[in-house]
Image (cartoon, rainbow, N blue to C red; front, side, top):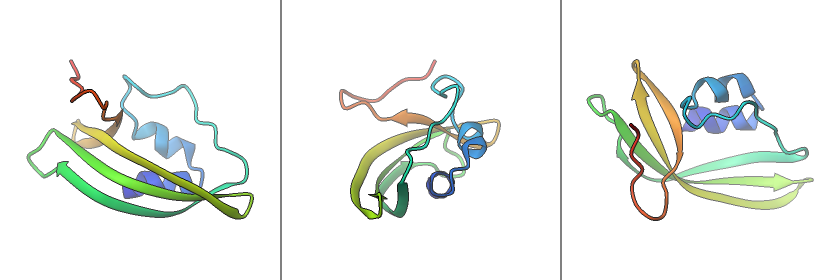
Length: 101
């Protein structure tokens, strides 16, 4: 999660796409002009250990827009391990856990 936040901060689209699960990965990433990511707060995690195949991270990512305080993105994200690498699957749906076939 921290590496993906850093990639957003420096606008590294190649890294973001390579760490995004193919089932949910967009064709390309468009960064918002004048948006700067400034801080990441990890609020909690589940799974994600050495023997786990899935995990979640709840976080708040702070950003500014046009040099002024912009806001906060609050999300609980789901990650899956594939070929030894953690891949971002997407936000955890509010209606319950998402299953990947």
